[in-house]
Image (cartoon, rainbow, N blue to C red):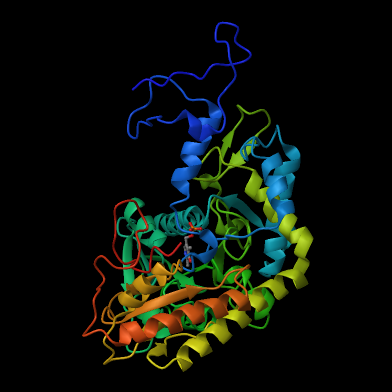
Length: 476
Ligand SMILES: *Cc1c(COP(=O)(O)O)cnc(C)c1O
């Protein structure tokens, strides 16, 4: 039905004042799938949208996501002040563009690039876009080398663990590279060095090493993978570069595990990505991609545009992008500094390891990881219990907690796990409340005749109308 504008004070043809409160204007019918013929009063439209969103889960209780759900008010204020700035308009917003370059330099130094001052990198929408760029650079470098050697370029492949995040399946599919997914085996739930090498050949554009795995928060052995590839090359085999998907870990390991060698200290690491919106502590919408030096990023991938004024080099899938997240990243770097980041990430790790130990002590659960690498851990229900991980996820959901349950990929699809991601803002206090709730539901679950929920219809939907268990790879 058409919705009449409420009378307005400022319009002499419509005498009267708007009726308050908003709900006194009921009944108002909101068309759900059609563009309304007429608009609404902004207060009414606001209330309608706001009310519908109340039914979303509470972001702070969302233990499924890796993405920031709490930020400082000052960061929010800076973002509000810069919502109107388009990141691509570098000539128009030179200060914003400069903050981006400063962040790239800081990350290059953090990740031990040979020369941070000339390191090459950019911000992106998230790690997914950054991974596409990293993968594209690997593919183009491989093509160039093959062409130069007079060899065919029609069958590129990329080697990675079956535990990679779904963005790598996308990269392989969208950019027509054969994905060589190394299966899990026994208690190896991520890529191993020997297995990675065994899957490489002359058509391998690169190996993806993940720091750390979406499924269980474990770090892949980047140094061992690089060493094994060094050996392969030294023995006359192909010389295969490594891209490190540090979506989470590239913002955790530098602060909490400074001696772990996973970054540009390893010659073989050509590029690294991270999600500014995960342990970079920025609200959703930011990733970073860096290359160790200009040789690692083929110049032909960098396009130049002049229609914004100036000569703008761009290597990205998107053109326009919000500038606010980059500004918030710079704020976080200034605000926290190295030691501030260390304290935030270490606190997350302390909460995760203490929470995992407490859950292990409850009895029916078995830890797969304990949160001592990424502050993320996966655990499963012991054999013989009359309930499934999906039952636990459902029961916690009733208490407001969003804890995903999912099965592992090949060859451990027999493992079903729950995963808890501890982020900035998830305190020891909240962790204790979660354990209280878990304790409260256990007697009921233990009294079941048998598991009630399986992977189908379990957990909660990640997309509209998809009430299935998360398969772990989509863990955002
Ligand atoms: C989250 C994640 C991605 C995807 O990152 P977005 O920032 O959500 O696009 C890729 N790889 C890993 C390991 C991740 O954890």
